[in-house]
Length: 98
Image 1 (cartoon, helix red, strand yellow):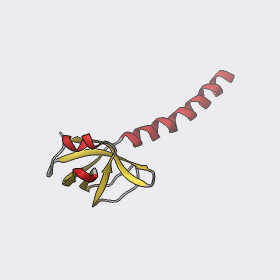
Image 2 (cartoon, one colour):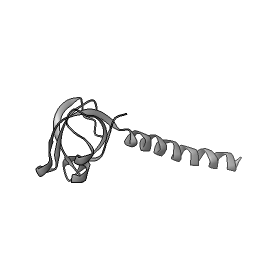
Image 3 (tube, rainbow, N blue to C red):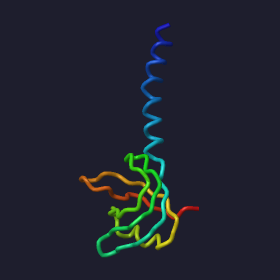
Image 4 (cartoon, rainbow, N blue to C red):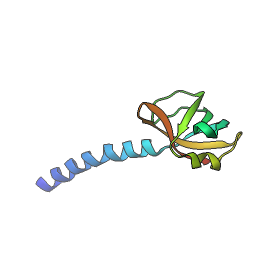
């Protein structure tokens, strides 16, 4: 009987963790409107960004690595991840949508 309770306790700890990890891994979708390489920023018209609770809009984002800007061009449909780094919403991953 103890082993059943122990297994339930372990499962209750793992389930919330697995749900939160998958929500954080979900990529947002948008369209590249403008690339400003000198300032390492990209303007995206995007849908809801679940990871930061942001509603759909068009806005400029910093990119964590300037090399990311070479992988997309204006007009591209993209999937991306945003994190709040030092109080600034920063794209940490971006890829062309398939």
